[in-house]
Amino acid sequence: MPGLYRVRVCAVGTEEDMLLLNRTLLENVDEFEIPEDRPPYSLKELHDAVLRYAVYEKGEGSSMVYAMITPHAFGHADKITFDMLRLDDTLYAALFAYECADGFQQEDWLRLHKRCGLLPFFALYAGADYAQPKGEMSFCNGQVTDSWNRMAAAWMYLFEDYEAGLVDEDAVARLKEIEQRLTDTAIDTEDGVAALLTTCRDNLEQCAAGLTVTGAQLRAAVDAHDFPLQLKLQRSVADALLWDCARNARRLACLDYTLESWRNRDQNSLF
Image (cartoon, rainbow, N blue to C red; front, side, top):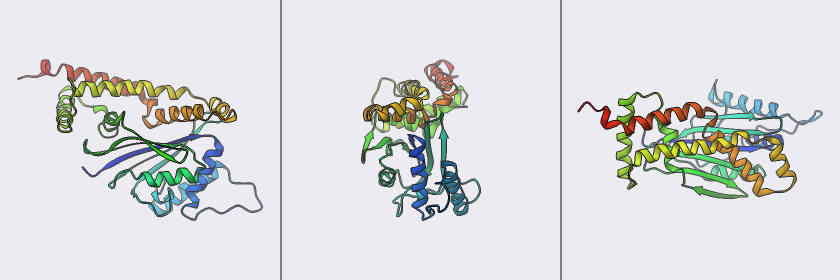
């Protein structure tokens, strides 16, 4: 598993943005034709066409083919999911998730970003081995920006799921392995594991703010040509979706339980 990477990518925008995104995905595999003698395709029709192509290429249960991201892609993924989300009457999001063995290929997503009228994309990625690349990346205005502020939290979420479902002893045992990884990668903190769990908790609470953003807010920013505010709102919604903040109640309870188990590890030991 050391070569395994997990990736989540999100784009947030209007219905028009999602129409262009789905159309581009189809164009990238030569599956789009401009309709004649009928109205333009609806978003549902385009998304259904994406799903049909995925099922044709990969079988039942498939929702996306990696080649749809860009022709002649650098990356590869045997299984990639693509969910179209309508968050309110005018706010939409596209959420991609996949596993791969060749790392996060930013060039592929940069090309898609450019072909979609510079619709911002936001990515969260990590390798199974803690020493492998991990973090966040944004694709805005034709540029790629890296962020390493939440590297550890990204890995803890994508590969450890915050140790959900483990009882005290198993959670502590697993966290001791993580502590060794932190030591091996020269992360020097007073208590690396406790700091990591606390960071994960703070991050989820911060990202949850994106759950309250509305389509009306985004439309007002677009109409006012306020690009910084538009991007801030899109990033906020994307954060909430990338980190799955709709399940925060469960995740925060899990982190609290895990952190308490870690802090009480010596008291719980039988030796």
